[in-house]
Length: 256
Length: 296
Image (tube, rainbow over all chains, first blue to last red; front, side, top):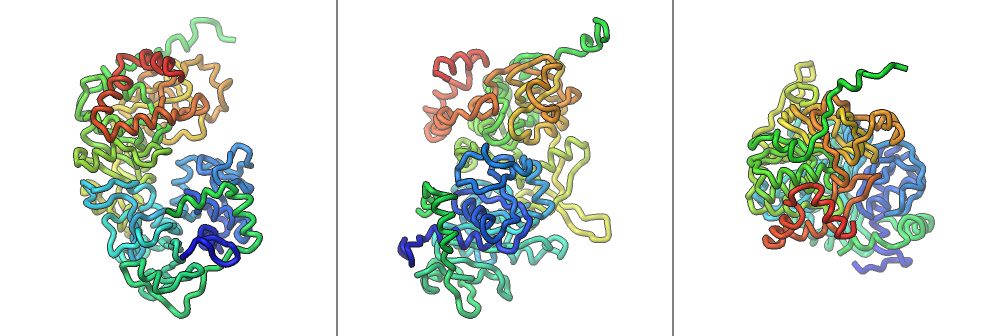
């Protein structure tokens, strides 16, 4: 799709809103996004329809207010202390929704950002497991994939975040808290609200056809009924994104 | 007020130099290193390992340049880690090169929260702590050393048993310490250094400044006093001891220096030169003098 869509709204802004939508209904949970689009999306959700979210400054504090991306958190009102140890305790307590990236993701949501190739001697060492195994099995996870063509994979080389097929093999108690809420890409938003828990097209960004989305996926995308268009930002949301959260336009750097 | 000849005079003075710490270590040991990524790492002690003849070390760390340096220099033959990152440079390039070359094939990579449990199990002297983290992932399937355990209660759930990280020695860096071995952090996060200190059979703590005990509360509130001396065997006064990693509020990360370090992962000659110029100097004092010349 082209960079421009209707009413001058750009792809990055559509993606911010699609990611913000992943938090709808979360209520009081800790949200831990990283990187420009996820951070802006979570702050947007809290500033508009999901006011009870708790957000971190990405260092060691949960902060109030509408801090711009990359803004100096020292002026923000601190509402709680969140050093790394508390973050892990928070993960296990379950009141958290994380946004992570995926170098590879398959149709069941198996995610890899650990390594490409053979795990013991990889062609490319990536981030490693980081917090993925613990996050996925404890609370809601959303994936942000700025380049669908590159990330969507028939199979993943290393499973750092388990998908619905692997989780299905575990007993009920172990999978009770597992949820991949959403996968948001440069082409659309996906979920797993299908009978066989495969990736379903939830909405497509303005100007993207189902054929184009399918073209950018080696596995078959699940479709149930009519696929809506991803909603554009409201005027208020657009103003918040452009003037408050990211006046420098850092979010655009994620689309390369 | 109590009179002189006080109890304090009889508490041992644990101050020592970097090289005296390293002299207490042996090749083949398991060494835990505190801090997190490129944050508050005991770099003067790491460099002292580098210039020693220690070898075949097993390093346990929320890894940053400590792991990168010791791996690239061939000092570490095994690494147990939650991640290895330079923070502002997400992938530690020296560690990455070693993984991709297959020169480090003995490692245990854990979910970063699960790593906390291995430290806690060691600190609490139990064989493991259970968690669901790892179920259904490569963390479990690719780690033959990692076992599961079944709950003895009615639920009978099978969980991952994160083994206690038994460590022969632990190295930490704090903002302040006293000569007796109490440590104080003044930055935003202690990370897991208190657990490291408890878990180590021996624990050596460097600090930006060694101060009289009664001065601690002039530096920070009482809950910054997180390392009690019963867990500390040696104290090293090392101003700029965490450089080039960050040590707030004393100093931030030296990003320019870190970039130079990172760039040497691509070029063996540049790495040899960087080691000679910076990492294998005869003492921390010499390193500091060189930093000053550089304008730091």
